[in-house]
Amino acid sequence: MRPPLWHPPIELSDHEALIIKRIKRAKLFTFLRLNRSFIFNDEFQEELATIFKDSTVGQGPVPPAQIALAIVLQAYLGISDDEVIEEMVMDQRWQLVLDCLNCETPPFSKPTLIRFRNRLIKKELDQRLIDRTVEIAKQKGGFGSSQLKAALDSSPLWGAGKVEDTYNLLGHALRKAVSVIAARQGRESAEIAELAGAPILNSSSLKTALDLNWDEPEERQNALSMILNSLDSVEKWMQSQFGCDGFEVAKETLDVARVIESQNVTFDSQGVPSLSKGVAKDRRISIEDPDMRHGRKSRSKKIDGYKRHILKDLESGVVCAVALTRANTPESAATLDLERDLKFQNIHLTELHIDRGYLSSHWVTQRDETLKIFCKAWPVRNSGRFDKNSFFLDWERYLISCPNQVKVPFEPGKIVHFPHSECTICPLRANCTNSKKGRTVSIHPDEALMQELRARQSTASGRLDLRKRTTVEHSLAHIGHWQGDRARYVGQRKNLFDLRRVAVVHNLHVIARISKVAPIQPGIELNSLTG
Image (tube, rainbow, N blue to C red):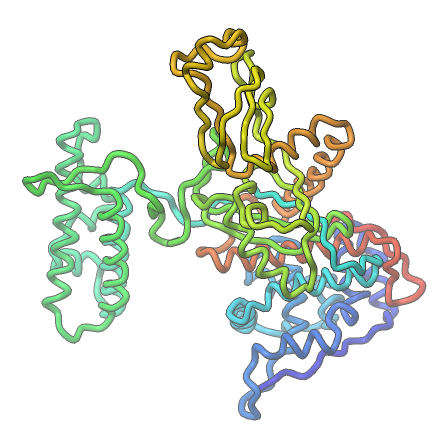
């Protein structure tokens, strides 16, 4: 059943005006109370209502605008679902926004909040919350152009799942499978573990049950054999139990254990297992969160979880789109998701300010003439000798000339080898190369762009343009403040939802600071948000 449109009062009551007067720091409550009817206009409410079935059967659902406001406030304060329900009854600021002053029961329950969030995610309407704030920023700030000048950056988001080594990952999967079967059958996990031939699962921890000297390679190998034998035993026991309830979920967990085995274990010719050397591509690191991965933000900074990416409009200051990728995914892959979200906003990217991690993105490699890239170029060095900047590239004939005017053909993405015979007799050899085979020059796949970037950053105006990107770093810091450094949810999609609603909180703060935005209710002064 579709919910009714929500039309809370626009004018402030005396009680509401008193509450607003008492709010000193968390100004978002004030802003949302004064502008809720404008943000959630009838058109937007009708769009949100599509997550509900159009039926005359059943109890009428809560207006989606009311729940959406609660979801935004939840991200603003970083609280749990239980705390949201509590705040609606205990905190007058929440009641002010949700139009339920002095209520003794909350306007909706925790299950309603969870169902709405899940439906919002399923219908991809969490992105529409960002789109709506972008629309408002354009209307109220006078940013009507469809030409987008944006900056893009990323930061780490540590996963909520527990990161474990191979032994504990296998043991965790086994223990989870046994506990699922036991819970469904109303039996103790220890009983199921004994019946399945995996008594090592009955100790407080797997390594306690094994009780080995982990410094000895042979004992570590024996431990791995015991764990894999337990895995085989549990699988065989499950296959022998016909018609037992709860085995499907347990089998999925054991399938995860087999994936972990394939990624981390190798067998010799005698069938003896050992841990693989190195790290498998796309290695799973958590049982509870299947999307978490090992990754790096830089050479020295490791991540276990995700990377969050934000695309910020440099003119209006709002975040237009966000993306969440696994930590082992290159930064450049995020632009595909960002581009998909931008399509709903009917804007065209004309300037992109990025760091070098995004230079291989499709926005850069497949750009047209209308998109201008701002980024620091990769440095060129040659130990004090002639570097690449000393060579001239003829882009019409695809010839490269050395400082001694020797010309050879080049291809983007390839290495140019100058003739050994020419380098041997070259009078400039001492300043060029000490290689016996002659000078080589690496040509970047997009060398023309690299030349453009190096030329631009050599000028004062070019360096000023590069500094514009720092504003997206500030926005990332604000979003990190609200979202935190550790993921709230398990799984990539739910954490993308969380990132999107935090971006909405950021954008609402930006809109509130736009000088042309006036409160709906006359006579109420709205200061900049500081909370």
